[in-house]
Image (cartoon, rainbow, N blue to C red; front, side, top):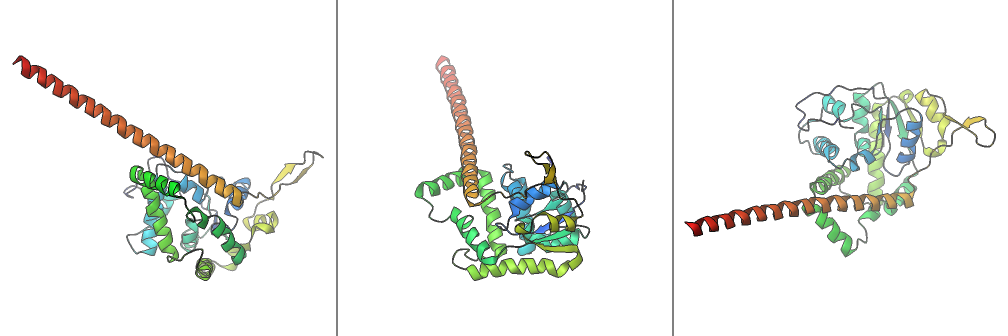
Length: 296
C-alpha cells in the first residue's frame, strides 16, 4: 500500500520495508478474500488485495495501478522494480486483481517469495463472476445510471476509477464476461500458465480454498493456526475462513456506492459554498463601488 507522501511521478525512491513472502496468482472469485483472511491469520498482515485499491478514496493507488497496467499491456511508459517497491513496499504478499495480472512479473522480481496458484473450477468461477462482478453493470436502473453520471461529473475519484477499470478491461482483451465465457476462461488460464512457466514446481503450490490449512501452511513453512475450543478449552485447529460470498459481495458494492455518492455530495456542497461566497464578495464589492460612485 502506498506511503502517505508517495510521489506519484516516481521521482523519489521508497525503500521496501518488509520482504515479499508470498505471491498468490488468484483471480477474483477464486476465494481471494478468504485466502487473504487466512494469510492474515498466518501473520502476513500486509497482503495486497483489490479491496485496498477501491477503498483508497484519495485514488493514489488507482493511479499507480493504472500506470502499471498501461506500461505492461499498452507499452505506454515503464514500471520498474523501484516502482513496485514503492507501491508494494510494505506488503508481505499480494492476491486478487490487479496484482494477479502481474503475477508472473512479480514472481520474477521477488524470487524469494513463495507462489500460490489459487485454483477454482472454471465453470463455477465463471458462474460466480457473472452473478457478482458482471451483475454490477447488468440491468442497471435509470436511477443508478444517473447516480453514476453525477459522480463521474463531479468526483475526480470516480473518473480515475473509470480509467482504471478501462485498463483492466483492455488487459483482459475486452471480452464480454457474460456472453464470451470461453474467452474469459481462456484468459484466466493464460495468466495462470504464464506464472507457472516462470516459477519452479518446488517454489509453487497448486491449491484451492477447499484444501484448507495443511497444504498451504506446509508450503509456506508455518504452523496451522490454533484457537481455543469454547466447549472443551483445548487448543484446536482454527476453522479456515470463508468470507465474501455472493450476497456479501453485493452488499459491499452497495455500501461502496453509497460512500462514493456521499463523497460526491460533499464535493458538490463545497463547490456551491465557494460559489455562494464568491458571489457574495462580488456583490459586496459591486455595492461598495456603487456607494463610492454615488458620493463622488
